[in-house]
Length: 467
Image 1 (cartoon, helix red, strand yellow):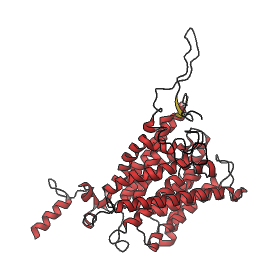
Image 2 (image 1 turned 180 degrees about the vertical axis):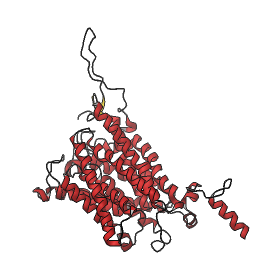
Image 3 (image 1 turned 45 degrees about the vertical axis):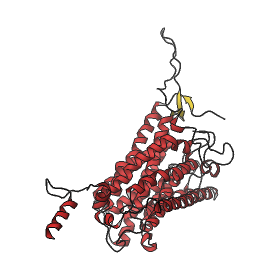
């Protein structure tokens, strides 16, 4: 068995790019996703919604550095056999063997100065091991945070915190092992989808978006509908917040997709280009769908179209050219715009359209690889429409549907346990006054007179005087 991590001298250009990419992906959660989701809820729940994203940054980080990275990227517990289900918790427990000093290349003797040997440090690929750890941590954080959009306005904050811990451990970390742990990179034997099925998921269509989307659906079903939904209007309270969040998500997504090349090379350039093409196209087709269906295009539709395009191109950005990116983006805008209406037909209260955008968009982008992939792209595979037959298509379907089924079933078990232990849903009074006040004793917009208490306490005083 080979020793991991390998020891060597990092490439400084790749390292700089990956440090920047890691920061970009973290920016996607806070402020990106927090503003995107926060603007779409009612004013009484905006801080709680943003806190659901923020707290994921804390819980997932702690788990990741203790055992999460090892569970996701350690050598498969089945060894060299056809397992590929779970990484070895102990291999990188507490990130052992990954900390180091600076790496430096060998300096030859010159002008009487003696030669200096290279200073080798732990590497994954061409970058320091800890840079890869940090980059993948950001993926884990945002995947958990995405789930919250389906359950805002009604879930107990304490239950959400517990959910982030349990779901990360038993759903995200194993699925990340399946999809992202390639043989011979961080360990000798990695995950079964990446290495046995060989489904293409360059940056997380399955592990991130399908995974979070179906988890959001299941959790929303266990929580039940918000009081008054769907007959009572629950309009976004601050659409500029949502537009800002969408812009930050698009900005950060370049770290998400192009950063997944793990090096500053042609693959990063290709994925940067296809991400831009698909996203712009999806925004336009979402707005066109709105215009034809409702008579007007909206800012919320534009923001949602941006995210739908980003989601759909995430798994496929390394396997398509311009035409494939245009097709994926166009279909993502149309299909996701129509899919968000399914909640009214089937009666599930997906508050911020996690199912319609992330689950449906993730499925669409993952499966379309089997149709529109081209060999000239970095992944080097032809899809059905370009003479490759159905070989890649079945691989994409197996990968997508396996993650869908696993995440759905295990999330249901988690939700069931929490429902009958800690409880999932806030009480009716807390929901009525808003989770900002009831869960955090804060309000985003204090409308009380200067020197007074909160808006809620002022209202209570006024009612008391009237009584």
